[in-house]
Amino acid sequence: MIDLKDVLVLSSILFTFGIAGVIMHRRNLVRLLMCVELILLAVNINFVAFSNSMADISGQVFVFFILTIAAAESAVGLALIITLYREHKTVDLDKLTELRE
Image (cartoon, rainbow, N blue to C red; front, top):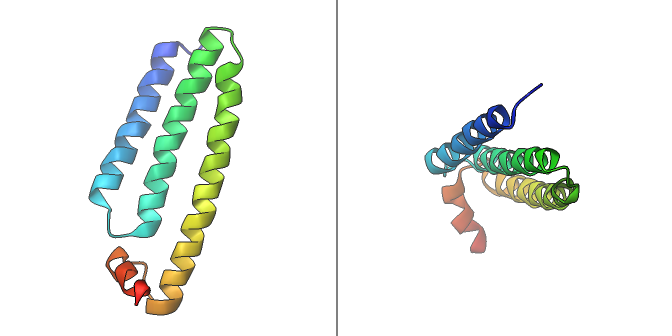
């Protein structure tokens, strides 16, 4: 059986990688979105782990709402990437300010 401590260690590692990725990869939109997804995944793992350990289903229900937000974030991010690439043939976030002109 997997203990709660092991799951929380895994979740904290994923969350740390996500935060480090957001700090390090601010220029590339694809990497930035992937790091945000890692952060959301770590939060979801925490909700499911605590929900399972407390024998309460409310944490698992809340995960579905987070997954909905993550799907919407991915769709908006993909639209931004496509628009940025069509205009400038790059996914560099420095070019994003040029889209306003």
